[in-house]
Length: 227
Image (tube, rainbow, N blue to C red; front, side):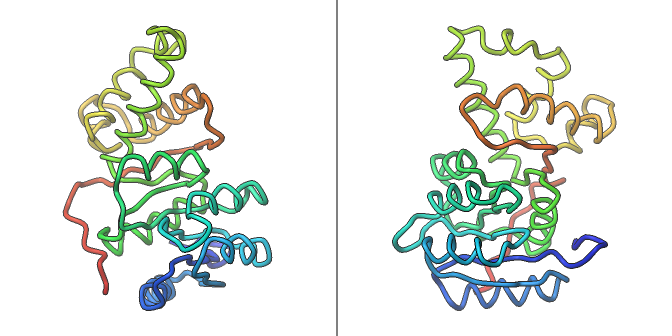
């Protein structure tokens, strides 16, 4: 939810007017302030530089400049702007490219409204918000990348503790922070701290940094399709 010192200022980027209006209405009703919209990547970069929103809610399939390219340019211009992807695509390649470009979270458009509102708040705090499947994808990709770069000894070379290795494997299985905490009999905050530390060690060739990772507490069907 919006921060105590004022509403979170959000910019919506999507080339479908009805979808933009629907999301803007939902965010407004949720206590967020929609300060701008854009319908293509070039406009998104230009308007974000002028408006400086807290969070940009970005579609990936845009005319002209792609959503991924727009994310990279927005983040290069001002790293304080957080970008959260809301896309119809859940393809692995799209997820990974968006995160590499600097996205602070990734939701598909079938997500529940409550999850969208929580994800915007998480992005504003600098946390990475995504579904368990997408989190597992990122950890799997990063771990494989580091292993390959280190000649098969990547995880060892990163000096991960046994607990961190446990948590990485559970994330790759699709468990949420809450589920991991329950299985390992530790606090959720402890899981988040370990995830933060692991991500810090797995930043090879990535410019994004995560002070925290927020995963949904359940894998219920997502139903944010408003139109």
